[in-house]
Image (cartoon, rainbow, N blue to C red; front, side, top):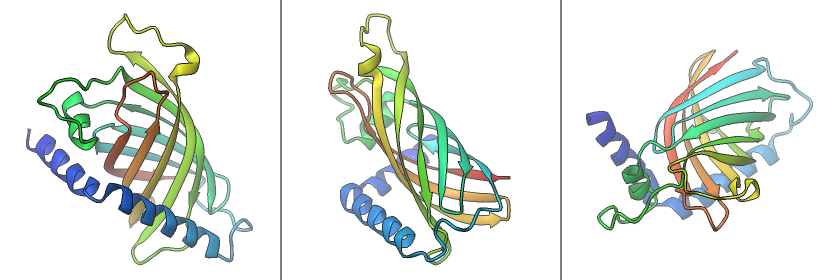
Length: 195
């Protein structure tokens, strides 16, 4: 129960500056990547990583294949933790009891860009991709396959624990079809394993 409360508190703190923080983080990530001189020539010594973002309103497992030290492709699955937590993160009133996710889960694919240089102790990254909602909350939903498609954007920071492990903080923005009700914002923390 305490971890659930801590999860809500951490997520609320991170979202207090949501739009401004997101713009600054995206700008910083883009600048770090653009100013890197060894951009596409070098390859990463760690080709694969698994990011487990467990402390989130949408826990996610993401698998990444690093093509270079900057660019990689990713595939992931996320699920909704609770409608109440999504309501708090997305500034919806949980006392009205009107917010409910139509779908519990989403699968996504995308392209990730990671800064080859650290900014202080952290490494920024960003990704863009597309996803598909599944695992409907009830059988009465009649959305088409096209309506279940959505966009997704992520920004985050990673800090090294050792050569093969990192901790990360991630902000994700889901862009659903207007006919589907789901939480659009997700904030989380987790662990990345590199191999």
